[in-house]
Amino acid sequence: MTAIETIAAWCAREPRFSPTARRLAREAMSDTLACLYAGRDDFSTRAVQQAWAHYTSQPAAVVALLNATAAHAIDYDDNFSPGMSHASAVLVPALLAVALAESANGEALVNAYLIGLQAQAFVGAVVSPTHYTAGWHGTSTVGCIGTAAGVAWLKGLDQAGIARTLSIAVSLASGVKGQFGTALKPFHAGMAARNAVDAAELAACGMSGRLDILEGEMGFYQLFAGSGFSAEKSADWLRTPQHIIETTGVMPKKHPCCGSTHRILDAIADLQAAREFSAADIVSVSCKVGVSNFRNLAYPAPKDEMQARFSMNYCVMRMLEAGSLSVADFTQERVKALADHPQMTRITMESWQPEEEALAVNLPHIVTLTLRDGTVLRQQRLSAKGSLAEPFSEEERRQKFTDCCTTLATADAIYQRLSQLEQQDSLHFLQAMMV
Image (cartoon, rainbow, N blue to C red; front, top):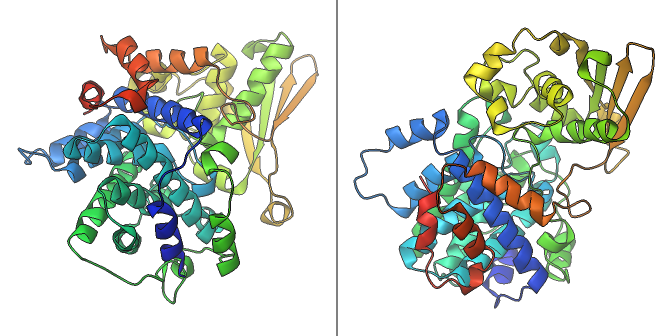
């Protein structure tokens, strides 16, 4: 079978997900909806809303577009390493838009999420990390294709229909990382969600394409800088006893900024917890990160809140000053007020060399603080807070939801219903959180 046929065959099976997988899915969707609500008034969201305002009755694809843009607008949404993507920012808005249009229930939404996430993982494995390092934004490439599988399943398409959807989605996948730090980055998530819905709707009408378009000649694998696909890998994936959400999981963000900063920020938090020192005590800060992380963080002297989210200098400076970062740190006014902060020029960043990364599965991110008294503090991290190895507590999850939804009067009631999502016959209560 082709890669697409393999994915479609798995997606079309009767859903068999463990209680753990379902709990993790509920938590991921709750986290994403909180980020969506917090991003509803961001410039990127408002621009997209204005551009599509001529739709008096918005189809599901446009609803997905608006809400996925909002979900990714403040870069607080989860990361997904197998897909090199912000998986849930595309998945949740696309699926929710279709679920509302089709009057689907909470159980179907959870199943579709887990199917779409697994499909994202498979497509990510096909193209491998070189896809992301080359400069493609996995959220809008891998995210689009994998999400399309979940949407197709939710719409009731059979195995052949899911396969057609995947083939169509490959032709709609796009988005380059050179747009990081601009309002177009959140739009990438919106575009991917809209395209995923459009792909499923086209497939439902009989549109089709090549089923070997992932691995075939002039296909996704060849053109998007992937490597390592094999029929054996495809077959092994089908035999995987546990689902990707249980073995790798999505990683919710502790900090409302680019995930490429997070291991450094968490390493600083580790040092702050272990020893007393203040920002005034620090002479210099040195950060060492991966090659793709270095390339993502292109703004040492950010001019606005979008650039600040992709500035190691700004994020580290705020972490040292306040001990944490909040949504309030990323406004035009706050960034402008802190533009000349002296700590910013004392922070440097370098990356591991490509040949070093080729020899290791995962190299640590390392921060080195030099204090005025000559003391050198060093800390490294192989992963950020929020991974399955170091998950958020229930209190941390709820606190993030509350912080994102401070203006939502029904936030507590919605959070409780989300924790029992499979028992919800109607999903209309979630419209209060949507654009």
